[in-house]
Image (cartoon, rainbow, N blue to C red):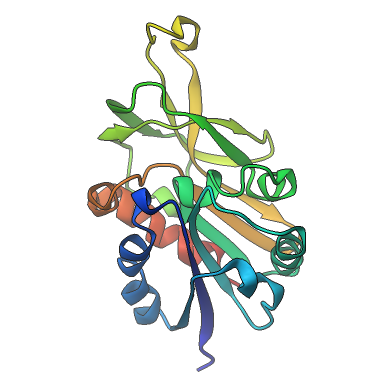
Length: 213
């Protein structure tokens, strides 16, 4: 049996616990036949030959144009890209080419930690058996690509400073294709506790497998 290769790339803002968070999913990848390599640097994007899946957890952080081109070329050729929360949609804020590929960019979590609901809105294997679930954590307001395949959404209440966002519905989980590659994004996942929520954990695990070659 051919072993698939997963590259876990982590770093950036330490508040999202990139090492601890990704370690939660490495055993799952290994149990599903992946040889897992861990990188603490986007330098690894300069050579992704033979990589079936990139699991990225880098909030904010910096990346060079050459590194983005390397990642983009690999995804376009079939390497999967997946992640959650700021580790994938609040990465490399100054690089629009990266955001174009991922299909969204975090812009705010107006209430900080808040009770909110994630509603499943698609019939898709990634969310099969899950209708919706409640969280108390950051609720991500994002700017998103209309070509995304949205699997779950979250709706905002009015905020005293931004009353006009009341009723705004944002994508919370989506997939998209990029050339021959697949991209998976789950916006919940701020804390380790969030990643232990059964529905969040299941969606991410399924998303990782879906994104891989």
